[in-house]
Image (tube, rainbow, N blue to C red):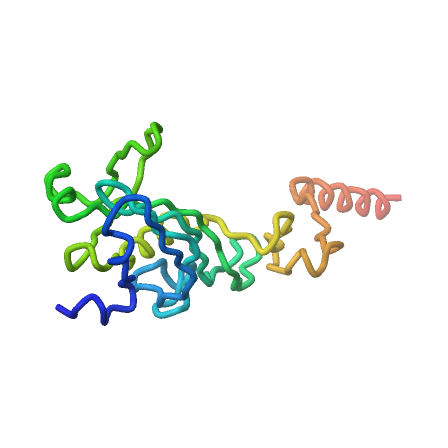
Length: 203
């Protein structure tokens, strides 16, 4: 296993983990982990994911409050136009000290409930490494981005999509339409024309 200081997702936090009340700002790019989405929508492995926020130390661990911004590739679900844009997500995560992490719910690392400033908040919990010297945010980035990828991305809110009959992009051709012919009475019309023709012949 690689030492955490060589991991692209390990952040040195030793200086703020010494006592409660310390804070460390984070404002940097980290490579996107693998497994975020697919070819239809996702974040390419290694793409720069920006994390801007801070670690704040409390009695039993560190709290990360940050905004994660990632370059997401997608396809508009209405017109199928390829999309590339940055998606921003606000996140709050708890990094417990090792002794506290082991004591929590059999070592689980997700869905912990912590009491902060008298308010109960549901938080994601992730590991500190090397006796609290490093915070590993690889799983945090993957979990946050996977859970928050838009299910139905649109190129714009009022996207008109594609023509259901021929596939023309209705955003580029807003006046496009098809004349719909009702064929239910075409047989009767043909019979009427035949009867009229026969009537003319008899005359």
